[in-house]
Length: 227
Image 1 (cartoon, helix red, strand yellow):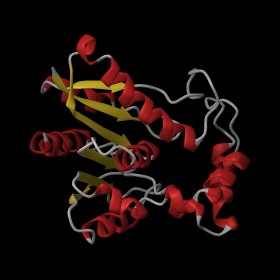
Image 2: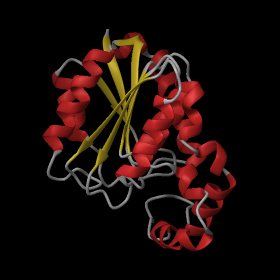
Image 3: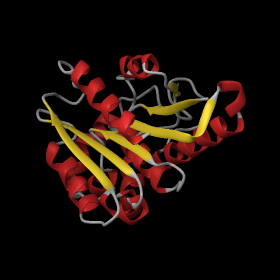
């Protein structure tokens, strides 16, 4: 059986981080990558709440098929980028057995949803362009973020992260998820006794375009120690 990573893509998932998947596979990890329901041809309708549920479904799928896929069910980790980072942290908070979770430029949808309505106009317009997300629109995106601002807040998950190892990575030139947003989440987790949190800032934009090797090495070093 192999330690296994569930790799979660962002919003909508143009950057899939499959180079990171191969980097982890080269070190002996299984990696499960999937598209959320309603995304990129997957059946169903997309929503942020469904994304969180889909992470739990992926974990259960691995547990149910552990022998076939040679999964060490005691060593399942969640790693996500952007919205995937949000989903990874939410998924780990909801599953006591997940000990290792990493958010790469994790989008704090609670913080975004709590912003003034006019600040969400750009997010709404961007969401309207996402034809690859079934049943989706800017209006639905903003409405869901506003309705779930409290439960979507990553800092508020701190009590559920006790006993876990959490890696948070920010890009110093990220125009989508600022380093400050990631630092605020890290501060909340650091203030909660019992969380092993590591915050790292790399040179990079939102996709870490010129620092992919540094990103992969950072994640691998952390997860080797975590397992």
